[in-house]
Length: 303
Image (cartoon, rainbow, N blue to C red; front, side, top):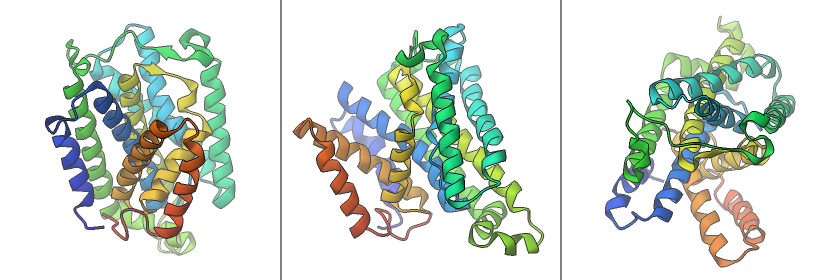
């Protein structure tokens, strides 16, 4: 893949409403792709930057979404309050759970993140005041300075696009910084990094919190895109999907996470229109993609 592939995808998304993709279905599909791309981007930063493979990442997405729902239930709908709250709640969840999980590695880390994810899932299911198992329907989308700009599909589309592009540029800058170089050094050899005077645990925990904050941002957009939040957003299956998007796009590649999420959503939607048993086709296709695209859709691109 060429280096401009992620920029091209973002440019196509920017132009899509003016190229005939302006119906309700198209806007819904593109919003879903961008929200999942943002969540996958945060996980890709974690996997590629810190070497931390999480199977509970959807919990951070769900925490961000439930922050929107809880505030909505109490009449707080101003984006200047709701957005920071969603991001902060997800970052705090990541910080608290990461403080324990990051003390482990490998399979143990994967299982602990899975356990925390399931704890978050069952906690959300028990929140009877916010829908419990049935989920919570927002009264309306979040307001911006008292105006319901997010009710406008075009405005919401470009908000999702701007936040996705901004998150990509931010995470890329972090990985290119001194912090990012040390983070990658701890991924390659934690003992060597520690011998050089760096604290791998602190760097990894900071990266985990950053990934949680970006996932919380995706949760904010998810809640507003669907105007609904349910425990299913936190389930381990969603974490598995996010991880596969990262693998499909290319492990260690931030643009790959975006490309992987877009390809995943488009393939899923197209196959669903062909047959109700589309998962029987989707699974083998994903396996073949991993086998024949060892570096993912982004190739060796790491930018």
